[in-house]
Every structure is written in C-alpha cells, then in structure tokens.
Image (cartoon, rainbow, N blue to C red; front, side):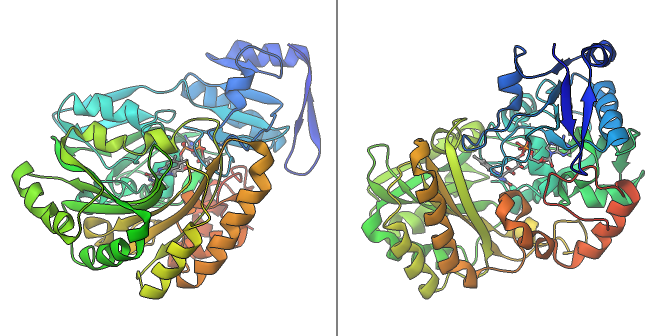
Length: 464
Ligand SMILES: Cc1cc2nc3c(=O)[nH]c(=O)nc-3n(C[C@H](O)[C@H](O)[C@H](O)COP(=O)(O)OP(=O)(O)OC[C@H]3O[C@@H](n4cnc5c(N)ncnc54)[C@H](O)[C@@H]3O)c2cc1C
C-alpha cells in the first residue's frame, strides 16, 4: 500500500505515509483502499459512467466504528470528503478527485420488526435490499422506482415513489436515523431525541452527517394492479393532454407517471405507467378511463407483485456505467403550451435509453405542511425529468448541450423549488431556492451540526 496525498477543502493536502495507512487499517473492520488496491476501481465508481474520479483514499466501511474513525480523520484535517450510499446520484458527488470516500456499500443489513411494523436498514442499502426483506412479511415503505438506487441519498433528499400518494414520501416514513456527526459523535435523530435533526434529515440531504441506519414505518403491501400502456409517439400531445386532465383528480391509491421513451425495438413511444394500490378488481375499474380514451399500441397492465412495479424502470434506467446527464424541475400545471414544447423537443431525442418523464405527486405527499419537514414541495405537481443516457463518450458534449437546451425551453413553466436529488453539479444556483421557506432553519441546523461544512459534497447548505 503506497503513501498518498489527500486533498483538503482549503486547497492544500495531507500526506499520509504507508505506516499511517497501515495504522488506520488496523483500526478499521473494513478496508482502506488506495489506487492500485483490489477493490479500488469498484469503490470509486458511481452509477453515472460520465463520472471518472480518483480519490486518494476509499474507506470500505463495515460498521459505525469505521465511519466514526474516517469522519474523525476527515474532520481533523478538513479533508475533501464524499459519502457514498448507493452511488446513484447522477451528479456523481458520491466520489471525488484526490479526497476521501466513506463508502457504505458493505453496510446493507435490514432488520424488520413485524410487531411494530418498522424496518431498520443500514446506510449502504439499495431499495431492493429493503423491499426484499420487508415484503417477506407483506410490508413495504415508500421507496424509489429503481431497485438499485441507494436508500440513503434518496431518503435524505425526500424520496419520490409509487406509494407516496398513499403513505407520503420516503422522508415522511423515516422514523429515526443513527448518524455520525462532523465531530465523530454517534447520535440518534427521532421524534424524542434530536427532533430538529430528524426534521433536517427529512429532505435536507447529506448536510448533517453520515447516516449509518434508517428506521422506516412500514405499511401492508400486497400485489398491485399496474403496468404500462404504450402509445406511438405520434399520439404524444393527445396522451399528455389526457394525462394532465386525468391526473388532476386522482384517489390516493392510484398513481400514474408519464414517459416519452423508446420501445425495446427503438421506436419512439409515449407511456402511461400505472400503479393501483388496493383491490385488483377496483384497479381494473380505476384504469378503465385510460384504456377507453384511446387504443394503446401495447397494454401491459395487470396484477403484478409490488417488486415488479418497483423494477419497471430498472432495465432502461439502471445499468451502472451508462453515461448520463439530466435536468429536472417541478411543473405545477401541464398546460397546452408546455405539452407542445415537450413533445416537439423530444423529436430529437434519438438516444434510445433517454427519456422524458413526469412523476406525479398528489395525495398524502401533498398533505404535509411545507415546513413540517425540510422537504418543502408539498403541492400537487409533476416532477419533470429530461433524462439523457448514452454509451459513447464522444457523444458527451452533444447530449449535455441537448439536455440543457431542452431544459431552457421549459424552465419558465417550473416552480422555484426543485428536487435536490435531481440537481446536477452545474445547478448550484438552484440549491438554495430548492429548500423554499425552510432554508433559514436549515442554515441554523447546519451551524449546529456541521459549522465547518465538512459535509459539503451535496446540495450544500452553507453555514457561513
Ligand atoms: C436511475 C435513477 C433512478 C432514480 N429514481 C428515483 C426515484 O424513484 N425517486 C427518487 O426520489 N429519486 C430517484 N433518483 C434520485 C435519487 O434519489 C438520488 O440520486 C439519490 O441521491 C440516490 O441515493 P444514493 O444513496 O444512491 O446516492 P449517492 O450517489 O451514494 O450519494 C449522493 C449523496 O447523498 C448523500 N449520502 C449518501 N449516502 C449517505 C449517508 N449514508 N449519509 C449521509 N449522506 C449520504 C451524500 O451527500 C452523497 O453525496 C433516481 C436516480 C437515478 C440515477
């Protein structure tokens, strides 16, 4: 194991000798990796293939004591620090060049308490880890729509998923969290301990510490009535107008997303993506207006296990290493003008893995007061995402510029608040407005828990 220089936030560096690395390694249950070690390449990689960063040190943590040791090291020397949960954030901030990564992927245990209907999941879990364990008992919480997205980043930023209209966003189902603070202290945030911190963790992102475990409220979860109705792209305007009207008044147990995407054969399509939670026969009735409005090219809606609904987007959205750039915002109203622009701009979306998706927020997710949690978007809105995905590095500039141009043409329809989990690193000026009226309270919380801004590789709340 070679000596390394680790970057500090001030622009300097800390030299760590071979002996010091060996000393640190003796303290850890997991592994401390430097460039060239087995596991280094995997430890530094994130989901977005465009991100190719080489940290000086990677700590593959295996328990809270490992996290404490690494936070103390980072804090003592003000090291550039990334915290990696699932590594899914498209901006790639879970890795860095020249600094330290606290990598939690080995911390993926889940314990289900069936009597209390809660689950405790470690900070390195992805959604399939949690779903598999809770569904064994017919239970689930609101999770992400792709199975290999990390629970940590998703929960801390808010968490939009199929069950949010019935049970609230993921952060609303977060009962408590154990975290390692900037001083290396281990604390619990819950309704009875450090309540303010729990408020901040429900949407304030990774600003306050490294969460080693999350406790979620669970709900009964059986099969759902769901799937895709696919229409040719030529019908996109018609389908989106229908979608706008149909989703203006939906029961909590019916959620419909809409996506301009390509069929497996590469044909441009538009899809209504449906999840009905409840009696299957009632689901058929609820979905009927969608079936009646126009003949779909393919009808793939029926009774399915919740895990199938949860993995609909996996194939197109999930492969690690896909190059990716996206822009996102909340759209309060799908006006005809907005729809016209969205459909027209999508005509040049020729990369088959790319998509433009609308995730509709309604029901319980919108009944929580804007200041009740750090996540302040509680209106009936559509989370709108222009998701560019391609494999060839020579196309990077083209698709980045294309996505920016697309976004600029629709930005005027978006709310001031954006979803922090969908911001890219070039969206820095959108971070502060994204916290809406909660920004001031978040700054106070940041001053209490991380006054030196050790945790800054995130949609950052600057304590200064
Ligand atoms: C294919 C895909 C599908 C997605 N689907 C959804 C969806 O359905 N719903 C939704 O709401 N979002 C979705 N997202 C966005 C997702 O919520 C964010 O990308 C989120 O950051 C992913 O969490 P992660 O743990 O994988 O992140 P990582 O990339 O590992 O980390 C991102 C940031 O989160 C923080 N963080 C991570 N782990 C910890 C921890 N243990 N403690 C403290 N801070 C931590 C850090 O600040 C880190 O920089 C999706 C993203 C992708 C790429």
